[in-house]
Image (tube, rainbow, N blue to C red; front, side, top):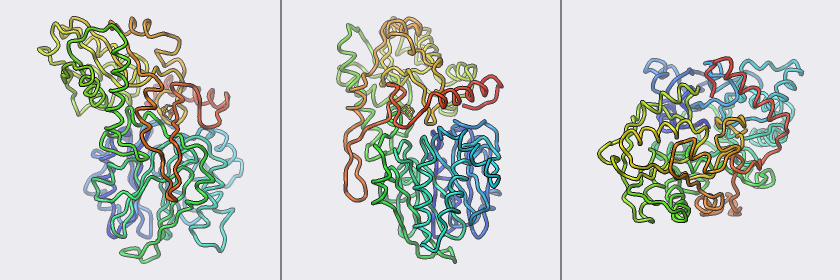
Amino acid sequence: MCGILGICGSDSVVGEVYNGLNALQHRGQDSAGIITYDGQFHLKKGNGLVQNIFSVKNIERLGGNIGIGHVRYPTVGGGDAEDAQPFYINSPFGIAMAHNGNVTNHFELREELEKKGRYHINSSCDVEVILNVFADELLRVKSQEQMAETIFRAVVRLFKRVEGSYSVVGIIANKGLFAFRDPHGIKPLIFGRRGNDYCFASESVALDILGYQVERDVAPGEVIFIQQQTPFFKAQREIFSNSPSAIRNSQSHTPCIFEWIYFARPDSVLDGINVYEARLRLGEELAKEVSKRALKTDIVVPVPDSAKPAALALSSLLKLPYREALVKNRYIGRTFIMSSQEDRENTVKQKLNPIKSKIKDKRVLLVDDSIVRGTTSREIVNLVKNAGAKEVSLAITCPPLRYPCVYGIDMQTKKEFIARNKDEEKIAREIGVNKLVYQTLDGLIRAVSIRPFVFSSGRTAKNKYCTACFTGIYPTKISEKMFKEIERDRLKAQCSGVTTF
Ligand code: SF4
């Protein structure tokens, strides 16, 4: 999970890219970067939060009316500053790129590219692989055709080589802004318009705060190119999309269902589905499961923030008092994104504080979005018990997580999951709760699937989702070798003490 943004505006865009990245900060707190173009590329990137990396001085240096930005949640690649995105290469044309996702065959592609001798991959960040494959394909298809056609043909060839998940924004020097989404549309990407200005972003919230009207989601397998001729400022722009062939390129549309459970901001709409509304429905579905158990509850308490809408809906359906009795320190990062086990444990204590008067002598039903390793849940349960709760139970808005995510989420080794080889009762004992209630897979899918995806042609496709971390069924081709390579990379990073995930 990372956040990406690309803007082609009528004036200097760096301020907007900066503000847009702030709106996407929840998607990655590890590093951030912005590259702009005004006849030459200007880049600033580094480790940390958007607000800490950019100063008035370095923002002034980033001139140009076209720019892309990135906030990183690291997947492939270390936590070093040189792995921060965006990346750029000088040939052909000069191309800058940022992406959200994870290239599952990046080891093979890296080898293949380096064997050619022409390409040298400098970092361990997989966008560099996508960028070089794109450059390679542009050189192959470069022709007298219109630039848009050249890009479309190059990306369609890239789709055949690059496996995994990737939503991409990029700049081609002196040509314009492009964006594309992998043929399964696993990671979100949406675009909007404000007069003659265009903005692509991971989530609609960035378009909202920047004042862009949402045009639509980028379709799986779609490439969009915003062409502008020099002089850049106030130039008339043309928008090109490979939309008709995108339908051919797209395989089944399987967006990551975890976006609606946890990752995305509740005020975003992804692939036409409102995140807040989906979370309310997750609570309604979960209420059905809770009501099947003999559970005596005095208050329902959400684990802030992503579980709040679900807890609210669940409490209202079960006619139980809803109390926000865990208070979050907003200035501490999301625990899910923390690097090491030690970081995660310490952060829970610093991050949440119970309101003892609401909890004391109560039978508390906590509602949380997920359990990965179980460490965070155990810590939270202890906090609530120490605050005087008579009994603590836990309801989870998603099913048990049992399989690694190979598409860019920090759960890549099988051993990490507390639910891997355990049933609800055993997990409940390990976490220290009276009862543990999980969402069912059907309940999850019902809660999120409220409308079909609509392509720009008007054709609709019934939403399927990536649910691989619950089911082990992956929408893209994943060989056992790939699993091992990804797992080995992950373990190596953990052992070396590098802050990677
Ligand atoms: S495996 Fe899970 S977290 Fe990863 S993309 Fe699929 S649904 Fe999302």
